[in-house]
Image (cartoon, rainbow, N blue to C red; front, side, top):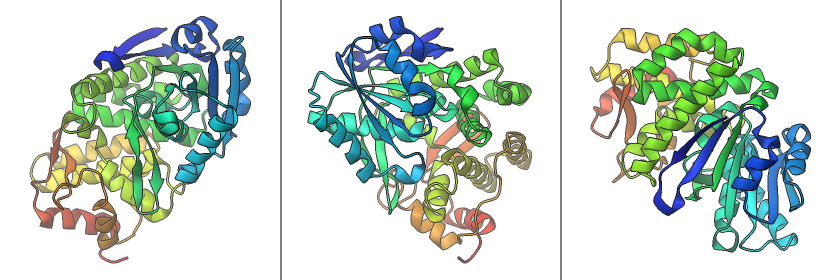
Length: 361
């Protein structure tokens, strides 16, 4: 087991990484202080891991809220089902919500915990690669809206993150590949040496080699913990972690949530960010091809849907990084160094959008 922490003063918490953790009663006794526990999961993950988790929780009172699986259910209505379950179980402010699943479950359960009785504790037990390296850490919770991705939510830090790497063995290959997009993101924006390690160890990650997986999860969590400790509520450096997301969220919203996995859309979005960075003269064409090649080796999409540049721009304008009407984008000053900027030539952005999304819908 590996252990690191995210330093947020009174809101600091540990991140545990290793095999078999969700069945470890000692770990759960330490990190889940509540007597009353609401486990939130979905109809795919629960049959695999819920019984094991409940056994490890021992003699606590455990209730469950099982949700349908998929990004299209990341809605206020679904979050309301968790609130209904908490009310029906007569949970009080000393209860704890456990999010057992991927990024959707973590976001929905965390948002419900943030709202219920103005805030109860919750613990992330992520079961996907994307959630273990990214979405479970940092306290972003929320749901989608027809007008855009993650438009409704709250910052609410968990009490702990328990990443059982053994759960990745039951992850569908497509989901595993989607998670790799977020892993690649960290190398592109913050650590070229880690990106080079990925290029050398990609096959081991796809084969779920335990040392490779645990190193990748830990290194991503280290980078995210450092950035979140500096900028908890995304007023500055934390926005770097959204490389590819502004483009990617437009893809998800236009295609219909669930048609593209989040990581797939982010992967294409990172390629568009690299394309725009090249058009601005910040990186070379070889750097763009390096990004494209790694995404392709990971089995990720590299072609955007032809939704039209105008529609893409309209959806991107709903991004949370827009300030004073200007879309701020995460771009690449160089490989391994991201930058958040609204200071780019509009013509260059239009060229990127038209090239990849099409000139007309």
